[in-house]
Length: 214
Image 1 (tube, rainbow, N blue to C red):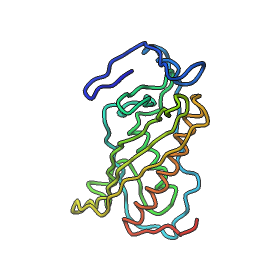
Image 2: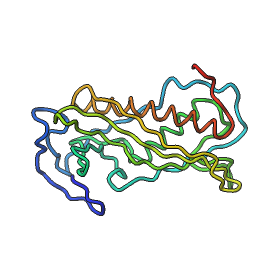
Image 3: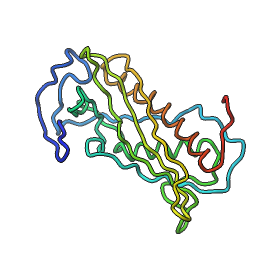
């Protein structure tokens, strides 16, 4: 599938930049059942020294049309967007990233409530984010693959809608090969780094610093 900025064009052309049984060797038919993959929240987040009696709502990230899907995006070049054949994420990309952030913030034990929506009419803080990169990229050699992620986040105080902090987070990870599992694992590695950095920043923005060196 090839995306323009406004619409998606379905194609059955084979990709010529990889040969053999690589994960991106051909485009699959739209009717073919797709295997689903998950990303894991970081497993080694440090624990907060204290719990702040405050709530954090994590809004669904916004993104462009090419990423607003459950398909796994790969770019063979800077102007072309394709999807890995026969596979998808278990959720649409924005919802999956929201889930990863929710689990990671919860796992630190730093806040009394973390959810997809505020408790009651309003909450204390809201995390607003935009996904600008969440794809694998084909290398100049035509076979190597690198995953690239980029998320811009804003921590907002709900009472007056003041932006307390803003930052962009990026992470990359090479895939061991162009096989599907190796590409998904590179997404997991890059996601682990990005989510960990974002959670540390987010807690500092609301007044909680995680212990250094953990």
